[in-house]
Image (cartoon, rainbow, N blue to C red; front, side, top):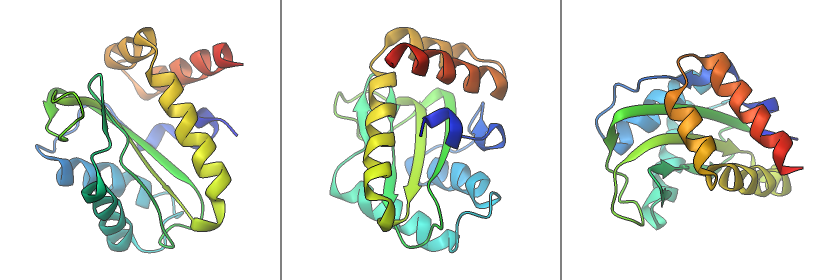
Length: 154
């Protein structure tokens, strides 16, 4: 399964309004909640933020991938948001984050969860991919960019 087959256009936010980590996780989470794949929105957010306390998911290069394995989701979910201003995620490189992929998976989906997390990480290592996401003007462009770069991974 590919990231592009899970991420929906309606779960892509082109300009996040949140000013901090919790706000943007909630903002993207609200869009994911509309998919009906989340059983308990408050628990999902709590689990993501609890995971974040174990160590920042700000991985550098202005990227964060907040995520959690949680019983609060029925099926794997991925949301995306970006911000020009940047959010302090306590990233490994000390830089603010502009690109955020929020992910949740049911604990029974461990293998899929790890594969998708690895795929997102591989995609985000590509500077051209990151730049294309930053420049994207609509959700169709986000999804098409992901599809394009996924095809190059194979």
